[in-house]
Amino acid sequence: MDSESTDEHDRTVVRALRSLAPLTAPTGEERRRIRDRVLLALDDDSSTRQAPQAAVGDRPDKPRPGRSTRAGDRPGDTRPATRPGPSDPRSEATGRASRRAALSGVRGRFAVAAVAVLALVGSLAGMSLLLARDALPGDALYGVKRSAEAATLGLTFSDESKALKHLEFAAARVSEIETLARRYPDPDDAPVGAYLTALTDFETDATAGSRQLIALATSTDGKLLGSLRDWSTQQAARLRDVVPHLPGAARNREIATHALLDKITARAEALTARMDCFQITSGSYDDIGALPATSACERPSPAPTTGATAPTVPVPTDSPGLPTGPETPSATLPPASPTPSLPPVPVPGATVSVPAPVTSAPPPASSTPESPPLIELPPLLPGLPGLSIG
Image (cartoon, rainbow, N blue to C red; front, side, top):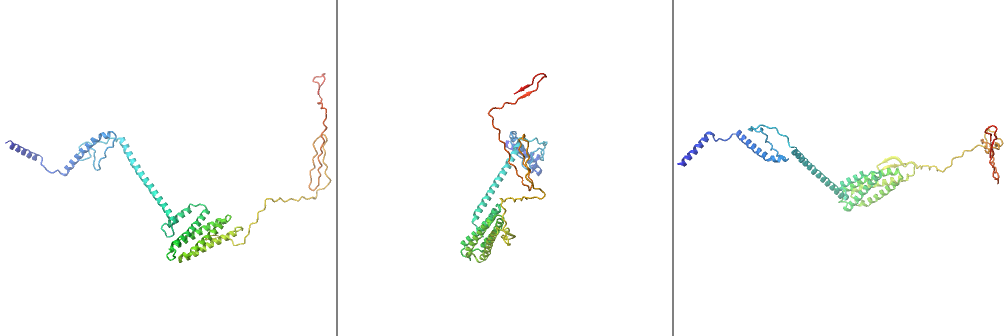
């Protein structure tokens, strides 16, 4: 009986609840309100837990984007909106310090990366230059070798040093031709383009070096002309020895190169022969430098000696209008004056005899000492005798 009454009571309560609040699914607006209230309760709970950390200067957590934690910013929130209070200066300083640390870390990493890239580029450039020292025309590193030679020439500032650098590079081209001839003993298998490149570069450097060296030699003592002649003779002999190993096209080009060397040798000899002449060059130029003068060699006259005597002016013996008389006697002074007589003033064209000076003998020394002179003074008062001193 009791169980049946209890079940009936439960069914009655259920029916009453169903009648008061029907069990229906919440609408979209109700779901949003429920979600906002749950999120607000969670935010309030988290802020309450983080309050002690903010009191000691810790940085509070940032709200997630798209969500507002301020009162009155969400729909369904009936709390009054409050103004944000002043931020904690310690937390702001901590934030600025963290941002600066992050920025400095980025800059440091960038600087380290830049130094590493520069070191890598420098090492690769040095390795390339080292490997390009033995490169031959037609090799992949031959352009690097020529670029290094151009840089070396650009860092040379003296005109004489530049001229000698050009001749040094030209001699290096002959060495490359000799190496190619040893590498390819059969002319039919030899690379014609490599030989033509070496001969072209040789002519360029030889022309530039001879032009600069001739300009310097003709403006100085001319000793550089002898060096240029010896260099051209030596390079011509080296090319003459390698001609049998050249291909047909390169052999034809070598003929023009050999003619250039003969021209440099003849120019150096012609200018050396005119170094003692008044005019050395003609003022005209060609591809290898100044042309020698074609006029007769006129040597400059020697400079006069510095020990020459000045010319003497003749003095006439007789002058018209001036009488020639006897010798002019010298005037004598009274014997009381010890001044000697003056010689007469000479007259042009007249012969004047100057008497020898008269020397008087010193008086004989007396054996008795001389008495001092007697000095008499008049009387001081009338009627008194005078005074005598001595």
